[in-house]
Length: 316
Ligand SMILES: [Zn+2]
Image (cartoon, rainbow, N blue to C red):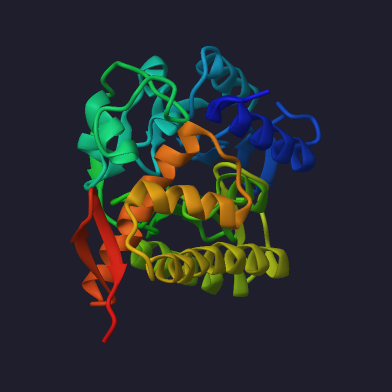
């Protein structure tokens, strides 16, 4: 059976979620006044004073009701929503919660426009079903923040590379960093081949930053996958880093012959043994274009026209 990217990824994510959450829809206590509500993405809840701050409210038709119910159990009201970045799956329920949404300066216009969200993820308007999550309406962002700002007891950490203003939220008191899509679970990477990124240098620098946190025994929470700490965290981060470096090496090897971006996407899925679907082939082209830009800017490859735009290793 040819699973679509959406159902395929959901299967994976649910599997990984189950393996750590046990009861999949129970609120999990991360520390003092800090909770995680499972999902894809999972939502971090910080109780600040008598109020609840939600990090990445997520998506799904009933999620806003589920979140409200869980917050009521904490005897709180929702005060504000913080988003790590503007990808549709992280913010879709924000308007239904009717609370101020905070986002990094580089992300707010991406979040607000349905077309901008597709451009960031796909490179242009996207065919229906080709993105993990799409919805056609606008999202109103009410306030912007900068990296290193303190918001409701959480510090905004620069973790860009997956998107331009990707932000982690660090709870210093509890030693917890919600790291969103700055790294991924091993299963997800193995399924798609390459971690989704729009700038490999920034993505790798963010992983190195996360390794620093992991070395200080900080609990790291990815949006799609199990939370990790200490050795497990370092191993997973190194797996993410290695996968990007391997993709760069494989691209250079493949470019001994002139090849187009779509040919590279096909060959990388073959080489990594990832799932071959039109959706994954198309989405990986975004990360591959970013990798090609990096290799070109380093002077390692050149552009050629051979019945298509092709890229080729420079000989000198
Ligand atoms: Zn994302």
